[in-house]
Image (cartoon, rainbow, N blue to C red; front, side, top):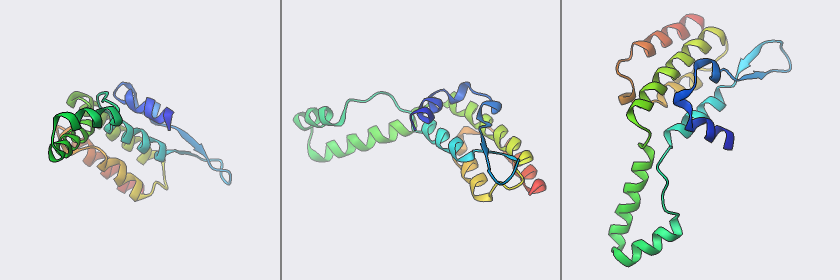
Length: 146
């Protein structure tokens, strides 16, 4: 998990080839790509956030200065900021990377489950794609192969 977190921190600097992580199946000589770990890495990228004050210290500080309702609002704000803190340009790069990854594995993975394909495609927020042309191309490739 730590490795996936570190990979997620640098996801915008990777290539499609970096994401092609093989998993070997014992009953066949085929190489299957590990899409689960890529999904974990993608989730880690989306969770990136600025360093925050540890909860115990922050809670003590907040109680001295704010009411309970203000504390709840502040914690909700911090959580929303953390989930959207990766820069917009980083998310644009990662969206293009993910679409390229899906195109590549759609061509090579004959048995890629639709649920995994959809999960990876939907992990990218809509605002991270300037247009959906690459995604449409990816879906077309998946449908032709599968």
